[in-house]
Length: 68
Image (cartoon, rainbow, N blue to C red; front, side, top):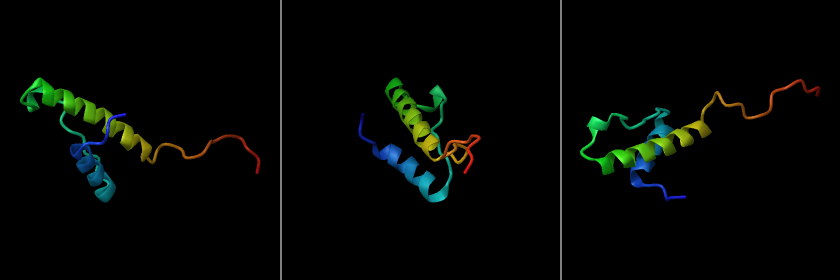
């Protein structure tokens, strides 16, 4: 696993402090070169995984026909 970059930390911090999901632009034309674009794609994938951890729609417990 790669260590978290400052770029990712900025977006994660924004999400945790304001609740706003910030994802970098997926448009290829928004970046100066392939290296920057590929880096943003990698960061976006990791941010989406991070966001999924805190998605309130995800059940935190098993839902079923359990009798208590």
